[in-house]
Length: 166
Image 1 (cartoon, rainbow, N blue to C red):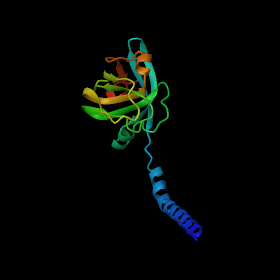
Image 2 (tube, rainbow, N blue to C red):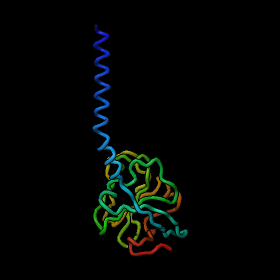
Image 3 (cartoon, one colour):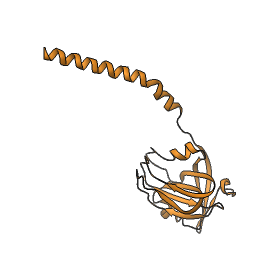
């Protein structure tokens, strides 16, 4: 008799699991349909050694800025994400749900890089402050700012900052 009771309990658990999955499927398909998408745009960084050309995704809406580069397995060289906050303001970022280390380039309204937070810690919820007002933030692969010779004082060339890419 104990064996029959165990088999019956197992069948009930399976039936309950199938029922729960059936109830969740509409919600899951809605969540997938609401996936955040990004527009791509060329960007250049004017450094002492010359201009570096990137292809970046734009984070312009609150939903896009909230998602950022979360859940990505890698960030390819000469790519990244440009966050536009509209007007200069205090800006803090974090690495929640971000699998890879990033370099965060904090940018003034005229496109000047004011601060670089290098090699940020994946999954960290510690806030990373702009250290002043920022209109935008460019996130690139961790360590690439140093590797490419990007420094505070270099200039981002992009229409968001009133500058065109070369």
